[in-house]
Amino acid sequence: YDLRGFRYAAADMLRRGPAPHAIVASDGRPAFYAGARLIPLTLDPKPSLCRWLLAHPDADYMMLADREERRLGGNLHDDSCLKFVRRYPRTGSRYYDLFAIRHGD
Image (cartoon, rainbow, N blue to C red; front, side, top):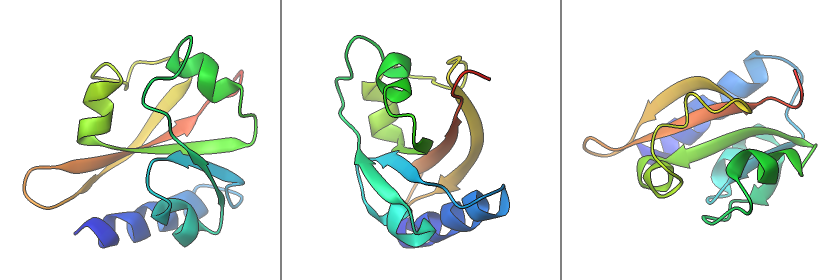
């Protein structure tokens, strides 16, 4: 399921508009499958996740595993700089969430 989720996420990103320039993730496979550059995710972004993301103007998407999302503070669906796109299943009850990064819109 893990690899399938990466491929499905890449297909969704490409379907949503122009090919992404860069993807924030701790795993490089979403960027690889989407043909984008990887921006490695730090699990302690300073001073906040949104400010850290907006410091990367070429980042179009962020993909997080459920455990990474919990480490970053839990439910990120309401963060002003993120737009939830879709959840992809992993093994068991785990998942990946894909977010579009909002750069001032």
